[in-house]
Image (cartoon, rainbow, N blue to C red; front, side, top):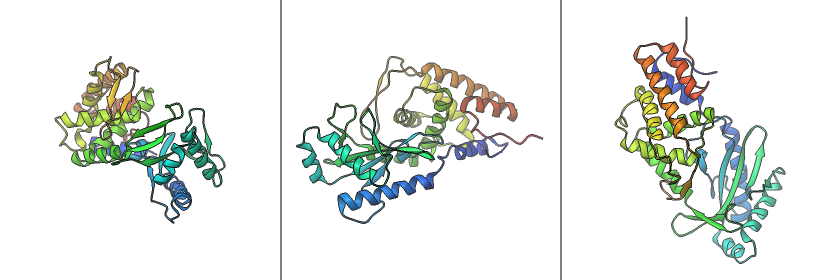
Length: 298
């Protein structure tokens, strides 16, 4: 049940608490079990933490309740890359071998039509296993499902580092705003991938005049961010992720939905200024959904 508070700062704190991902202990238990399997087989060591990393929104700590997929990176020894590189259809052979190993413990592991290795569970998000090899620096080679069976290259761990650096610099606002934006995305089916949300949040917060403010100004932060999104050029389809500089392609227009959200947030602020907490709360729930906390009414 959602927490209840009349104070706007407390309501946004309660909202963020309500957005926390469910079943994190169970997710981490599965993660450690996979790490033990992979480290024993590929590295000949006993460890439930090494050589395996969360990626995506869960790894960047911007995921919220209701996420359907968690990406897990499996780092493999460099000599295996040379082995698979020389094979015909090596990337897909690697995926098949990792699937077969995983399937000895988790029989539900499978490779879908998009050539992604998936591990579904009925009581938590599906895990997607991405085997990869460290390149020079922190970049990685991995079987690219969009590359017609070839190798792709990216640097997801640097993306995680950069958003954490931004988040620390701005007192937690980056990850908070990214999570709240996902709640809006989920309610209105906004066509924005998570990495684009996180990238645009970082770009916005750099220039936002309230970046040094407290929780009491989160309502203004939401409104101003929606205005920022609505003002982006409609014809822009390409962005670049901070940290890795990988290309983010999104041709769907989210500007109209962002403009509607800006107007809704502006209306919420008018209720807040009038100290009409009941209508303000209903307004925030219109924007974010039922996870925005109710207030106690006599």
